[in-house]
Amino acid sequence: MAAAAQAATGSVMTARIDTAALIDNARTVAARVAPAQLMAVVKADAYGHSTDIVAPALYAAGLRDFAVATVPEAVALSQLLGPDSGARILCWLFDPAADLTVCTRAGIELGISTPEALEAAIAAGRATGRTQDVHLKLDTGLGRNGLSLSQLDTVIERLRTLAAEPSTAAGAQATTGTATAGTARTAGTAATGTAGTAEPPASAPVRVTGIMTHFANADIPGDPATVDQLHRFDTLYGRLQAELPHALRADDLMVTLANSPAALSLDPVPGSHVRAGISLYGISPFEDKTAAQLGLTPVMTLTSRVLNVKDVPAGHGASYGLTYRCERDTRFALVAGGYGDGLPRIAGNRGDVAIGGRRYPIVGRIAMDQMILDIGPAVDGGQVAIGDEVIIIGDGTTGPSAEEWADWCETINYEIVTCISARVDRIAVGADAASAPGDRARGGDR
Image (tube, rainbow, N blue to C red; front, side, top):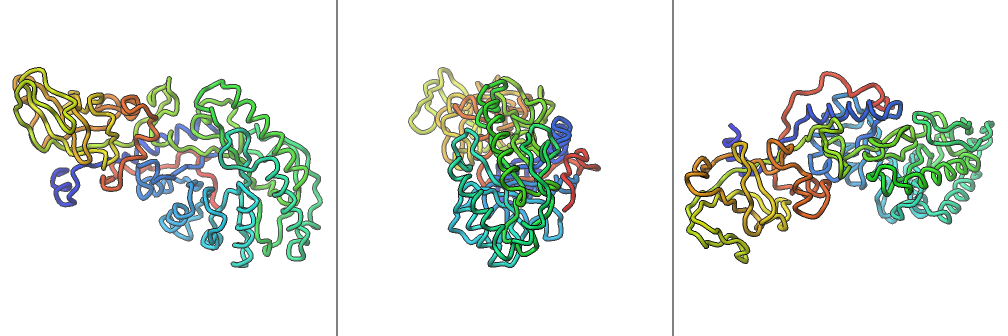
């Protein structure tokens, strides 16, 4: 049946996406981070697993908080889930010169990393007559996107000025609470202090609904850089509470620091939510721990088929450059799949794949569309036939894991799965979840 389906679609390679494993992983992560809530990161086409499959499966299981990187990803996700889904969608990577009104109209929340980005969000709110929800992203040491100290000064002053404008002054004057410097270390709470609870009026062009940062070395448990970032975040967060009591929604402020490695290693898990990505797909973010050791199951199985089997004499070469020559009479098997499908060329003469539960080496260079296996002489490799299924990426037992591919390719497992190209069909398998991945994973309807 699988072969017939592939013939109908014209695709030989298939990525099977196990939605049951996906939901199980979400439950595992949600239980680990409680009382913090789970926000599913589905950027880069759900790390190569297909947002069209992953997001609806998680939504059907009850999850409501999602994150992506770019505005187009956020808009596509909003359209996929529907305007009345109640899903909360956050994105943080955009050109401040872009028209952000599409986000404001769709209720998409924006991460703010520069004063220019804040101005773009304000402009979108004013252009639409709606309030644009924003998350202030703080650079606590990663050095990537996020507000530096000087940029934070500018943003604080701009938010103060905005609150004093006629359209928003009522919201500022209604604030009666006094902010107290607090800590974001306790999950599920905005802080130990109390910020002003009055919301800006509906006409306010922006509203701060979140504070966020990103760790640099959370995949190295115990690294002092993570401790330094936690302290820096607490200091900056306390400052924001003290200086912007009118701007922070203390009743519903999303505080997010932890990515997958931080969520699976820090105790307690900081913030009200965690932005979990790679772990949801059953892939370990740690070099020294497997997915199984973390209680996770790989969601993707990448398969192909044998297209040709031939006898070759000793000394025969394989693929471009003839970097491999067989030492004895043997058989070559041709398998569909190459760097045009996202399989790194460097894995040639290093990696292997599985056929019928047995591993066979990839010989010669991986080409754009195909690879060659040395399956041994007929007495050894005779069981391999044209049409046989090939497991290119499995769980380490069924076929080589993403971690093994990462080792062969001198990279990380994240890159292996996210680089699987669009011409590889993604097909959902696995029963739909009957229940949500834990109450704390749902994130609550909005």
